[in-house]
Image (cartoon, rainbow, N blue to C red):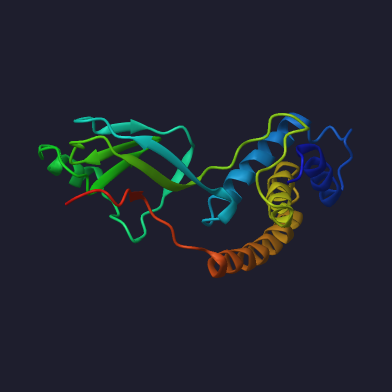
Length: 205
């Protein structure tokens, strides 16, 4: 995991810009870097962004706030009961259902709403892909492996080249970025493991 300071240096070196070059301030570079981190982080379900959050249900309570920054929920069949993620429209149609064993849920921002409302207290674990953390100081490190640094640097360089109005440089960075992103996606797809949102095996239907 590489620090913001080192990524700044890599971007400036690629763009041939000295730290004292007035065309790019550190504040601007931080904005570009964090935009690149989010862009790269949401292009694929990267394994290092996989996370989980556990919570206990409350009788007749449907909504539960999550502490993590959820980018995408994971709902893949497993050995236990799997809750299906549904649309808000379907949820509204099911909202009058009596309480019981939940079989579906809606995720809105960082809140999960279960349908039907749980009739008992159960322990649940939600597996998801989280948004990447932003950097705010030079010592902050990105939450991706070092092999991912070049993608972040390249995407940042595209923003920088556009800012300094060098369209040829921006195009060159963009071509390289697309090629490397395609390769990274292929590697992630081949290594991805299936996990789901489960309930304990003592649930009785």
